[in-house]
Each structure stands twice: as structure tokens, then as C-alpha cells.
Length: 376
Length: 257
Image (cartoon, rainbow over all chains, first blue to last red; front, side, top):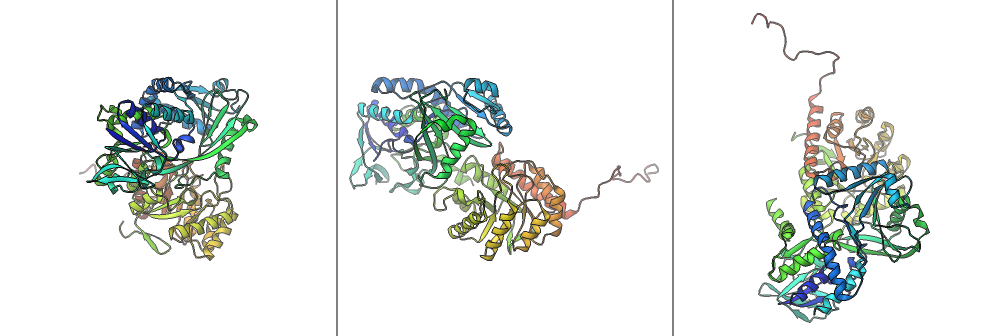
């Protein structure tokens, strides 16, 4: 089986690794592997703290992926000898004022109704766990089984693993899908050459909707959702675990790594393919982070970046065969790409190789959107 | 109800519920909520969208056949608001604008002085201006005199869900207004929207009460019915309040029948 994967972000790379390891001849096409949202993302692994009313299927997919993460990372690190900074020391969510605490209380009741054990903390208990938190913090929620990973290290390890398993990497831009006899026959590169394949996986994140050669029904409904992220450095202990804050209704997170890096994110902006870093975006991040952790102004500034998340209409990934025979879609992971990488690789590689697809994949087929159009 | 149409700047609207889009958890949920609301006019923050981007909230409105009312949310000065309105007119091809000039981030209350200044500039430039204003009858009248095509007093601060905190002021605004009065901001649940219409408002504008509800589409349907119900009650004319009971069926003659 010859497979070509458009897009070497975390989802494309992990699927390519799995498919190649299972014996397929895999080609990954990407001008800059891991250079999209995967290089900007903070890498929080938290299906629990981000659960939203009406998005319960996404929660189940996230939990299924979180359950796979330990073995996934162990296998990856063993194979490549590379570290990924994977941590499972929980995620703390804190409320800055009483309105924020009301929101967290509501979230805790919702989590409990879904059978998720959430641990409610008083403000003092939050500060005992993270002494740098502002004294006024009103209370919090601990998701003890959530964690984090460094997406840049994860990407590097996945690229190595995919190549070790025999996958070939073509560092070019995909210009379109080559279609023969009303079926996908490969990928046309920007220099005009065609990489032929039995099956094509479209995993190009927000760019998945802009590829030439697709019949209208096969175009995945994804759009770019911009996120600005700041990276800071500390030499002294500052924050022990990934922490999300609700600050006067606005949301901010900080993800610390063992090497002293702290990732501060993220804005959420609907501005098309715009990756400009703006004064206002950075100000909002620093404003909320400083309310939450006053000492943050002492940290060293390292980097700012803006990435584009692939957003689907219902915020959930789009995974499965498309309306064009031979073309499969694996995109729309939105804010959850890093979390959903292990389960997405299992689902997509099984689909590409006609293997047994995990049951949890059922809700995420690309045809769920066209069905809704017909029923209106 | 069919002959009871809302008319703003000479244009008829079949629904008296105007929606906002902020706070929706996903485009899908927003689409379902807008459809359930029956709205024909929906406001979008111009600082939060790129009109040329595919799959944006503007695409959703377009596909649902809903007219876009661009707004100047996020502006703190008349200068920013005027500039944002002009960019919106250029990008969307509409001269309607919901004018929002905010005094501070914590309360998101309108800055009345900047608001009047921006309204005068935009009216002079040919805009149909719908200003988001305090529940101040004097300010509402000044905005109308400045040439605004509607006035949109708040019930309570944006996103607070505190309902209508000063119904008396809303009544005073309605009594004196020669343009449509649209209750904008503070709606928490259906009864708040019904109350706004019973007080005589011509329409209700809301977003958070629907977009952040547990079931947005269901709450949108509730708001649609509440606005219709409140409007009908206003047109029907409520009974005077009494201190003591008054039997709805007469007691006379019962003993002999």
C-alpha cells in the first residue's frame, strides 16, 4: 500500500509513523515539517479542563487519547532516544474573582455530571500548590490526570520515528490532489511533479481547505483560528505545573517545562491566514498573566509567535474517508491537536490500512457536516 | 403579528430579536442558535473578523440569509469608533453601524461624551447609526437629535445577565423616543426579554444569554418566543394592578341558578 500524507504536523507525522511501521510505503509532503500550529502550541494535555457543553464526544476522544499518551510517548522515546518533556502532574485551573469562581463551580458540576472526578480547591489550597499565585485567587479545580508535553520536541521525535520506520519526507508544498478516474491518485507538488499513491491523507491543518483539485464535497470545512503565544524563561522555581487562569472572564494559561521555559498563551482570533504578532495580543496575555502571577514580570522574555489552528464548524476533528475515493481527511483538531495526536494516529492509520478503527472515531467523520446541510 | 413590522431607517424587519455572535462555543452552535432565534439582523464585532476569511462568522450569517450589523466593540475613543465604522462600511457594503464606545474594560459601560461625538461624525458621513447607550433618557434624546436611526439603551452591563435594572428609565426613553428603542445588553433569560418588550421597546438585542447558555439553540428559541410574547402583551394592553382580588367570574346570581 502506497500512502502519501499532505502535512507533517503532529497528526500527519504520527499517522505516517504508525502506517509506515505497519508496513505501508509512506511519503510525507511538507515544506516545513512541524512548522505549523505544532511549533506554536503550548502542549497542554487537558481534555478535562476544557470540556464544553454540547462537546461531550470531543471529551471522550480526548480522554481516549490521554489514556494512550503514556505508552505512545514511551514507545516514541525508546525508538528515537529523544525526550519529549511529557508530564502527567495534573492541570490546575484557578479563578481570579468571584464571577470567575462561579464559572468554575458550574464547570465542576458539569464535569461531575459526566463522571469526571474534579478536585475543588480553595484559594489557599491553590496557593499552597502554586505559591506564586496572586493572594486574591478565589479558588480552583485540579484535573489530576491531565498533563503537558513539549510539541516541538514531540514533532522532532515523531519525524525521526517516521523516518526510522521507513517513511520518506518530501520538503515541498503540495499544490493539489492528483485525480484520475474520479479517485485520488496522488499529490501534485508545487514543481509539477506527482507523487503517486493508492491513498492520500489530507492533514494540512488550516490549509486543508485550500488545496486544488478537490471536488466541492471533498473539501474539509476548516478555517484558520489565530493564536498568539509568548515564551518566557525562568532560572528559579516559579510554577510547578501547567496552570490555567480565568481572569475577569478572560482565559490565560501558563505551561512550565523542566528546562525553565514557560509558555504563556493564547489568543483566539478569527482573522483568516494572518500570523502577525500584535501589541494588543501580547498585552492581553501579559495583563491576565500578571494579575494571576504578579512575579511574571521578572521573567526573561524569550520568544513570541502566532500560529493558525485548524478550526472546524463544531470544534471537533474531521477524520475519515472524504467524498473523493482514495482521499482521507485528518484535520480540524483546533485547540486539541497535540492532545489528540495518539488517538488520531491510531484512527487514521487504521482507516488508511483498512484495519479495525477504534469505536471512538464514530462521531468525527467528514460527512457529518454534509448530512446537516441536507436535513435543513 | 404579520403587519406589526419593525422599521429601522426605512427598512422593515420581520423579527424584533437582534442577535450578537460573541461567546458562541463554535460556528455550528452559533448557526443553530441564530436559526432557532428567527433573527433577521445580527451584529458582528468588526475588530474580531476578517471579512475575506473563509468559514468566518460572516459566512455563517450569509448562508443563513441574515443581514449583518457591524459594530465597533472594543473602541474606547470616538476616533477609533469612526475609523472602525468606515472600515466596516468599506468591507461589508452597508452604511448601518452599531456604535459602541466603551468607557472602561471592567464595566464596559458606554462613554456618553465620546458616543455623542462619534454619532455626530458618523451621521454627517451618511451612516445609519444605532448607538449602544446608557439607560439615560436625556442621553437617548440627545442621540436621537444627533440623527441616530435608533437608540439602544442597556438593561445592565454587557454579559452580566442582570436583566433590566432600571425599568423606569427604559419607560421614560420609550415615551419620548421618535426612533425605535432597542434594549441592548444585560438580558439573562427569557423573562428579561419579555419585560423589555412589555416596557415598550421595539426590539431586543442580545448575545451572551444565548451563546453562553448550556443549550444555546434552545435558549435562542426561548428568546424568540419571549420577544413575541412581550410584544403581543404590550399591544394587547395589560390590566391595571390592584391591591385586592377581583373575581374573574361574577358572583351575582349564583344562588338562584
